[in-house]
Length: 227
Image (cartoon, rainbow, N blue to C red; front, side, top):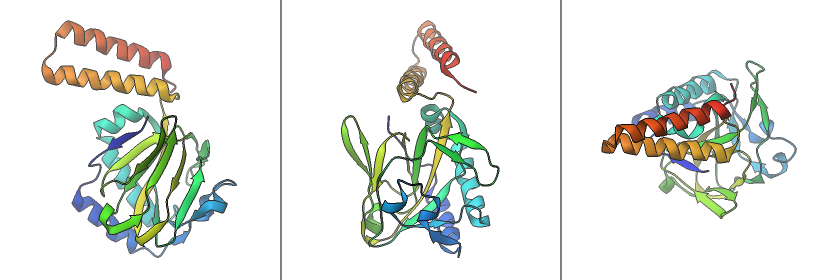
């Protein structure tokens, strides 16, 4: 299940975040965090995730997501890896790969199972050519290039890549989520149910039907959640 999440950050928030990120001198070769599969196909720059700028900016992203109902409904987050930041200039790319199944937080040493991958765009599409996030699933290849401040959430099991930049620069945040519900098909079912509940609430649907659906949602969540 791929879910676009618009407006995670406002235009002002994006502007402030970009200024702080681009003003940092802690950018390093992106291969420092790549595994065996990713290193040969990764060509970008990455902000040192241990630096103060990365920590502050990552915290601001997570703070925005804590109150984003669409993210919470789609991800059912348990643990989020501290957001990281990358930039792609002309000729840079990240070839086809699958994200590692477990990440270790370099600050706490805590292990996190990567159920979901997230990319938060910090450059507008007109500012660069190329740089699409291409995600492969059973229905084909999906190219994603969103407005600055918008985010895409997708299964970390997906084969994906960032296509080569031919003009300009692409700046983004990226991170992983360990969900309360491990299986993507189950998360998708719960997301569809929650969306239906919200639609019924907005439309003033029958109370009895809404109570039944809410009860089914929480009973399924209780059955499937791993805490």
